[in-house]
Length: 186
Image (tube, rainbow, N blue to C red; front, side, top):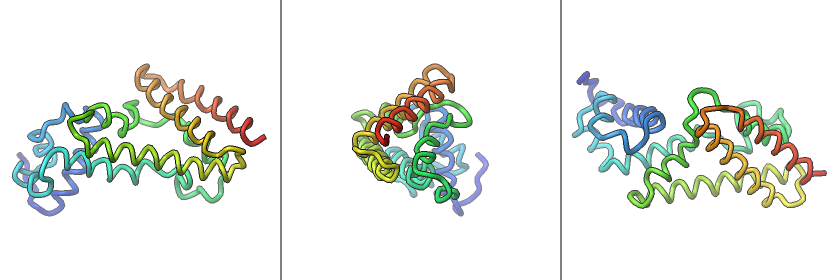
């Protein structure tokens, strides 16, 4: 093992967890491998995180900030209309198509990690709430209903593109989102 000492160990563990959990899965990534790839001992890993579940929880909390908020997705959000910000959510993701990390965690954690399920539920509810604020700004007559429809569309595009290893579902979802927006704001 290439040991880099304790400095930055916690962040290395989280960075490694982010890479491995998303690319290979939570269940497929053992603590031994996580420690090895983060260049820490298992003892050091357990000093920072009392369990693998704790690593998974912190991984999800850390990526919550990186996933983006539909209200202000990026530095140029103020220069884009609410409609444009909504439609940007349906741009096909770059990189490997592995789906939503929160959905993946919910499936993998199932009943084995109830704390993870709570984090996933809170994130998904927050996403819909943020979408509702944005759909209200876009002029939707029923912002909450439109937000729920767009969230289902977004989740479906992520799942289908992952299952098919094809970015085309994002294109179809974006067209459907445009139609929903037109109907709700017309």
